[in-house]
Image (cartoon, rainbow, N blue to C red; front, side, top):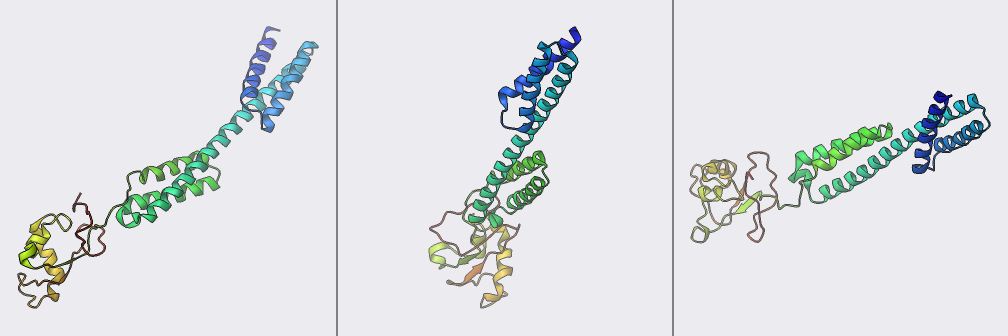
Length: 229
């Protein structure tokens, strides 16, 4: 009898705990129904029936718990996938595919994996991928791309030459890299063999050296980041 009462106590307690927390799923409703039947049977001295009902109540309470956990995981994954989609859309709006290519690619790949896992109802994995997508985009921001072109000014105004231009922060931040400018632009010079003969008004191309994204012509009114940072 003590064993029966112990089993009933544990089962009824488990069922009642879940009944308090979760009321809107079929498993919990069944757990509640079997709990009541177990109580009635116990009061009537029908101990075998009471034990059977209590076991069914416990089984359905466990199924209810699993169902709720699954639905919570589904909801969290769905929410994080939406957040990742919104963040990816923002990233595209600020040209992150070009300014933050590695972060953008990682975020996009992880979002695709999240959506695939969600369709397969692997909600924990979907949530993990969605979080990874969000984490990849965490540091992105709108930036002004480094210039791809520079219009040469008169020497008296800016001391423009390959050496000086190369040393400017928005170009290469290092005058020793001047030959990269020369090689990319010498065919536009009146005497290609002489790197000293650049002329005002010349549209100088600034080639990318390390895969950095460059776009547009240098504008002194804009604020640029320093090359290499």
